[in-house]
Amino acid sequence: MAEYLKIVLQNMEPVRISDDSTSQIGQTATLRYIPGTVFRGIVVNELAKEKDFEEIKKILFSSKVRYLNAYPTDGERELLPSFKGFYEDKRDEDKKNEDKKDEEGEDGKRKRKKLQNVVINGTFEPGCKRAALGSFCYVEGESIHYYNVDTGSDMKIKINLKEDEKQNVFRNEYIAAGYVFTGYIAVEEKKLKDRLKRVFDRDIIIGNGRYAGLGKCRILSCDYVDSLPYQEYMAKGEQEGSCYMMLVSHTVMRDGKGEYCGLDLKKLGEQMGVDGLDIEYCATSVIDVKGYNRKWGGRVPSVMMYEQGSVFHLKYTGTLTGERMADICNRGIGVRRNEGFGRVLFLEDYETVQYKKAGKITGRIAGPEEAQRREEDGKTLQIAARGYYRNRLKQSMNRYVVEHPIPKGRLTNSQLGTLESLATAYKYEPEEARKVIAGYLSHADEKGKRNKKQKEKQNIRELSDYVFGILDAELDVLLGMKESSQECIMGIPKSGLFTQRELDKMKLDLVIKMIRYDYKKPE
View 1: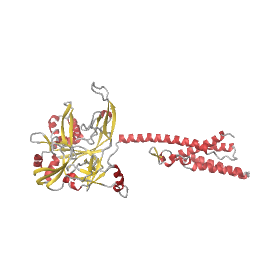
View 2: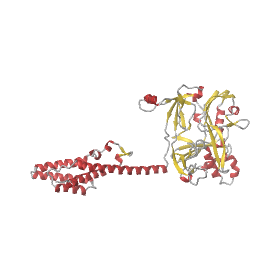
View 3: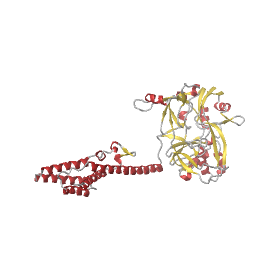
């Protein structure tokens, strides 16, 4: 059995690997995974610098070295392409709304949704449709947990159009940065083991758009493992009479005449060591696999293959042994196995899966570049939110000054002037301002007592209550702002926009504005 070099990498920047099978004129779609040919290209380009490359080149392009696709990883859990063959209830919008409560548990979280497996007996209940299972999944007990990969896109303008070209604007899709992928290289040639591992001892750049800053990936770990990839899903023990085979990658075989035929049951039966192999039921889709040869400067012939995730319920006479299963899962079936095609798994307890549950990849790690961008974007948004909120506060303060005149009563302009000068002098030291203003008003109150001016004394107390009513209040609540009922401004918590010191300074500004407005009022 081959030894497997396990490569765990994280895309620090967005990655675009063109998906020719789904791309259209004017837009280029991206694969949601890293194909094995990417690893092969990295290995060949690196080892081509060595003196004996011509000797090892044939091995690198042979089935003795097989470059497997790298699929997303959720934490420590390696994901597989989503299984085909599952159906779910098809409900119209009205019924969805009616049944929403039935789908939620007491804690308000979504329950698992019931599935039907058409690969078991070829039937499903009326009113069902193919289940939406995202792009990747893992199975745990009776449930299949499914995931999608976030993508983005950019618009470009094509210059130097040819005579027959009219489309000059096109869109490129890419995988968002920060995902962790796990891929493998199966190595049967022991003398290449260490050299292959050394290729991945540094960061790599993959995919399209390299000159636009895309494709930078960091190697998180790279080491040999002593088990088959995805062995946890493989059937344990012998499979007598029937089994379930899932395609981990796109797969096609050739028949005895050398023509592509999907699955060559005679050849596959020989590999399995059974007789009368037949497909009882299956759930499949096909894909037109294309490619490009840089040396030839042209496209390679396309091949129609079964798509990864397809599942076959195989029936036969005899027993499929664990040794045979491991050998087929190790070597693969069909053509172009060097590129990662033809990988299969014989599934354990596939017929027991009957629920689905949506998941979000928690293992995604934002790279330093992305984290820096997010931090900068967050700072920009915070600055914008501060500016917006400050302007709203100023507008509300101006309105408040007009609608809530200061209770002057018998107070003289000199008393208000003293209060204004103290607030202005200590505006940048709000805590000290409170002490000084409190001392001044207390002194004025004592002075009123000594002079037995009861009305002035009462006016001083009203002024004191009024001023400290402003200084002690929540500013946005005092001003009656709509934002006072909101927790956030532009998604930023209000508590993070201004410090308490800054808010106290604004309150002193409000007191100063009110006194100055009183000066300008006609007598």
